[in-house]
Length: 624
Image 1 (tube, helix red, strand yellow):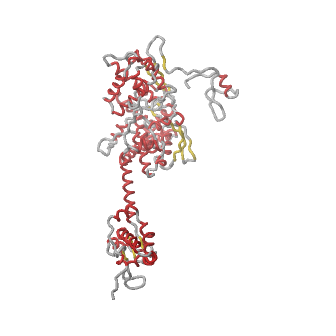
Image 2: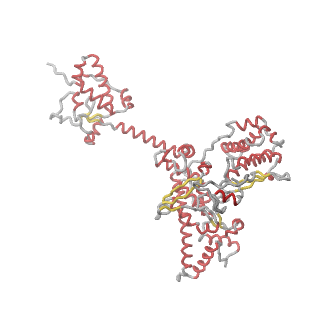
């Protein structure tokens, strides 16, 4: 609902007749929201001056951020009214672009398109003169300054604006068809940059952590000196007392107090800046603080930039606060989180780090009046003029989220280098993706467990699927799984006669694996000591019930050949006679031995099985 003023009577009636101020009235459980007495119409998003001037589009986002787009700076005035209306639809209360950054992007699309049309020899003067070639020309122009998928996304934005131009019947049929057809940029997905490798992430976090610790120690040192001055510490030197007095004035008024004696005029800004850093967070501090917050929390940069100052500490073990994530849509734009707190190591957990941020920027926040946890002193340069009433203190992301943090310069100061040997490209979005990837690895790729700030589908589609480090890790995991499976399969060891295979000495097992102890279709672990005593003189059939017999994978071809020979013999012999002679051997072979091996192992052994004669299993024939 746009800005409006309710009448006092309407407010009182909405709460049962009580006199309640406009500032304190709010909808609660069991209580209806206040509504005006008469018809309410929000102010229009598009303003058309009565004198016939260029239209103005005003935007107020759901987060309270505002901006104004003036068509007077654009050419082709005959198109202004229609495109202003379309822009108002796209960024208005019912449109799909409800943040300041998104609205500005839509404005840039309109601006670029009209400037491009103005460069043509015969530009269109009205929307009726728009042609498909004009839209295609826009795509070609965007390709000259950005990559293909970015250019197609720009075309996507333009087509969405064209589809809401007023009076669609005035458009040429081919233009309307082109704007509605898929494949011209609509639903074009842009593949983002991958996350950082483990080494890159570690060096980034180490650099950010060192800066965060330095910021903390710097401000705490200023606070200690201020405290000693206010306590009239007799041990303070004259210089410390003068500095303490300046800090006390800064703490009381928010305005930086500097001793300019002995300084050249050109040195004044640096001295003012150095003095402010004793008690306040400043603009260059935002880069390491935001990077470290992203590495700890795994949250998107826009969510971190809107961290609220309001929170609850739960038994000193966790901090609870409400986060904003607008990509989830209007109904799910806010979510409550609970971050653990480590009181001894505040840089270890996100809860402890959040409380540190809250403490470091508390003084500045008292002067800036922001509801965000982020508040800095920006008194030098432009901020000194624009924010004179607050002493230069501002919520850096209150006016817009797209504040320049100079992340590249920060990475350059620390000499951060990528795995390719080039200067590391520093993006907070890549840190978010890296945390998502590392979480996926830690839980073995189980997507429901990976889900931290997104659904499992979103995590896979936008963070994991195209990431090269995930692909490499998954390939390693798959290779290890296959190797383990093969090793486990080859580790099949069957000790016959009911004895455990683990009791076989390792030295004997190695000899069996090498074939030094082979009999006809198994290995004998102790031929000199048969179960009946002395050296074994039994037939090979007796091996299948002997505790000295050991079966390994190398025996599988012979075992399969034995099974085949027994089947063939059954076709030639009486069943009762065959069962009396080979029944026990068949049972052990088919139920206790062969099922231990995988189908793949049996299939491979089938290709190289020898031809066995059952006479060999009976032992030597005694001729008389």
